[in-house]
Length: 277
Image (cartoon, rainbow, N blue to C red; front, side, top):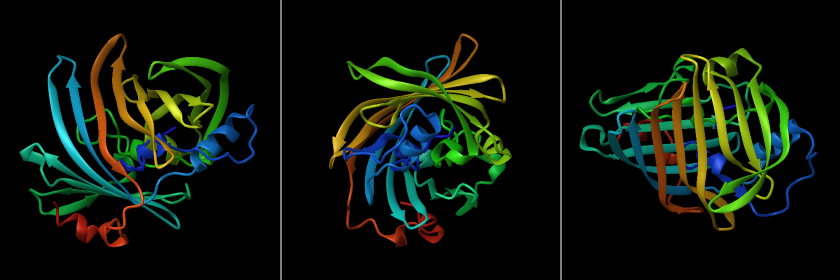
């Protein structure tokens, strides 16, 4: 599984972090595929803005910090996201534009803009399993997942984990890519997903990476409501090989809001991306 249900504020990573407080559509709570379809289809915020601080910690404890601003917009076929790095100075103005289609048969469009080259480059399918800007997140983690491209298995129908200091009852569902497209783009053999029964959103993910036999852990923390939507304010991702932690990325979100009138379609085009900050 890749991460839709986390970026619609940071591409689709945040779509993993958003959930509606209204009643959910009918689904079978015993069927893992039904649950994951509900997670993917739940309501999320539109015309969003956010600012986030990325901290990347290597295996020796050295830390790099990056500040990013993000805008996101829903459209008929999916969602669009544009983000720019504010700091540090050597990557200021670097940007990424993502057009994320709900239809899993279509390739999501992603462009990376590097100010030093004065042009943007399209991210190919073969590159999407690679690291996004040196973080523990891949380009594929930042696009939505089509449940029809995965097979699901219920590992536990009820387990409690600590979430922000309180017990949270979850399903634990195994997800395996079953199409060549999903296997190639994610680079994952399988994932285990802890889905909150109360919030209908993933709160923890453990993914097995095919290349290098690594494991990626992602946790969603500091979950609060904004405009009646459950919204994650902290994401922690770490990559391990054996018993060693290779790197950790902490995303801390602030200035998050929805329904902003200045988030308009003209922001989400390649020519605007190449204007930089």
